Amino acid sequence: MRIATDLFIAWRYLKPKRDAVSIITCISIIGVVLGVAVMIVVIAVMAGFTDEFKSKLLETTAHIHIYDFDQGYIADPAAVVRRVRELGATGAPVTEHSVLAQRGERFKPKYLVGIDPARLDGGVDVARAIKYGRFSLKHGEAIVSCSIANELGLRVGSRLLLHSPEKLAKMVKVGANGSLGVSEEARMYLPDEFTVAGMYSFGKYDFDSKVVFVNIDDANELLGLPMGAANGVFVRVKDPFHMRHELVALRKAFPSLTVFSWRQENGQILGVLDVEKNMQFFLLIFIVLVAAFSIANTLITVVVQKTREIGLLKAIGAKDSTILTIFLSQGFIVGVVGTGFGTLLGLAVIHWRNDILGVVRKITGQDIFPKKFYLFSQLPASVHLGDLLVIALASVALCTLGGLIPAWRAARLDPAQALRYE
Image 1 (cartoon, rainbow, N blue to C red):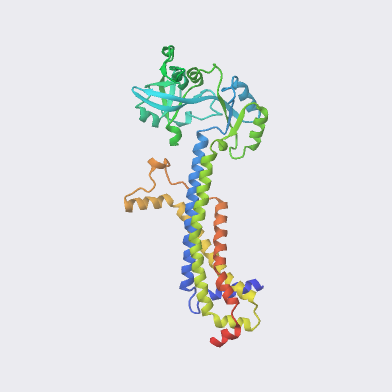
Image 2: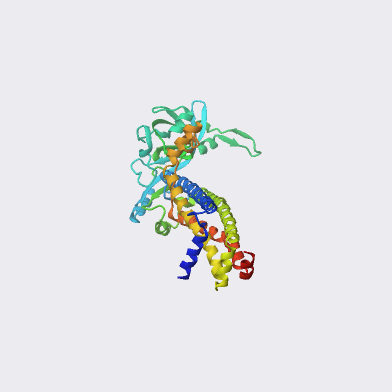
């Protein structure tokens, strides 16, 4: 009952006698609305970028990687794949290594990935990303990205030479005194020639710009690995975000092999994204902090205007804690109202974000979100309930604390002096 009475008095103090809501109160609420809306939009866009990045990342990498770093390759990957399937996941052998791609006189460092075209359930689904040509990895065929095709002037049916770094290294003979010469066996090491069967695009620039797919047997031959071997096994699970059980089971099943997840492989970039999101939240919270100072200024004015009423309340027995609660409640009310409308405004902007970008593009003539740089068809945004709760709680807390100084001043007023000077 007392809390309801304090809230009622606080609400009455926020508006003048004749108007529904004072202009000063409206300005304070608008400040909170804009601050909360900006925070929600920015954090949602950052979360959207992170989610899109993770989605693209999971399209172009395995959920779990299995390697034998001691031997350099897995002699019997088929046995590993069978064991993976027994544990409820899917696996596929893969041979990957850095290579040097040659087209005419042009040489570009690329990354070779040899896959078994009959086993795509555990690795990268290249067939789904084909844009031109066909998905075919017969002997002597390769699939390149559209980016690599543009870089090297390739098209479907073009010839591409791939050099093995190990074979190139054997062409150089290093003398005892450090002198360099041509190895006598240099003529034995020739690049492998491949025919471009198709072109793919995953929409992930760092992947598309470097990866060339070939048949795993061709990759083993190029890199000098035994036929039927693989230097790794790619594993996919049902839920890549919750796969602790699968990781533990695979590590127990293959104690001599190295098993790690996609999060461990990309831990640095994922950590950077999380830090950027936290830093943006930390910086944007200052917008709400400015609104909290505006609330403090409003309440100081209210305290001056209501000095006589405060004196009367204390004269009839109101405690200092009651006065303190009344003025803190004013900050709380402004925070709740401003946060509520700010959340609605932020969600509306997120919903119509691409329409808003289109209007800005027409007015300014500039594209502030060019597709050629970000590789997204539209501005990504993802609203997480946890982010909304953190923003709302932080906003209400700051607005409530904004009323602490004027509330303390009001509670310290002497009723006799307040009534005498009024």
